Image (cartoon, rainbow, N blue to C red; front, side, top):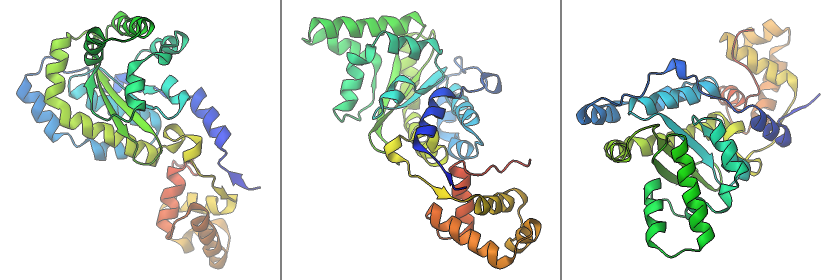
Length: 297
């Protein structure tokens, strides 16, 4: 039987099983550190390599949260705004009731932040900038009221301001939004701390997008961005043995009881299906696409 990574199945899985980070595995935000310490931490964090080593989405989100906490913030969100379901169900550390209530209140219908990003803007801003803007500009009464409702909604959860970083996705279509916030932090303190950490926050957002779409495409890519991979079980079994046990192709073929010629044919089929040119690339691509598991069974 042919194994096919089905688009609809992937979409359903990501909707029903969005991961949450393990907060017990990271330190609380370092809110008492002085400015020099925060700046030094921002310049020295080697989070890119750390994020790349994540084995699954839960660990990936936990490692992102660890970086965010080390910089003195409590929470982050990442959403692809080209997809309605991703606007509604972002990868986030915010309380689960927040995205749910945001959808139920239909805030997205009037949210000026989404309009700002949909217009192609990529300049970062604070959410308080949006509030100040609508207070001084002439907009229709319903938009004004609903956006103030959004601000009050965030305040009710203890989030008094957020730093919003719109970006163009590296490996997919449409814009993405990476945002940082901190529960119960005074807005002036939040902005001061954010201004110290802006370079590393922007780099972190880009890393989340690039590594996420590359290593965990099921959670980060939309259906139009994904490709169907059609591959039979035997090449996948061979790749799995090669990956888990660090064997040569001859050793793997002996273990599976097949000839080296058959093993070479399986590798060739895998390379063609995965669109790569080497055995090592086929193994890496199969792992990345979630087609094989490298954990020992």
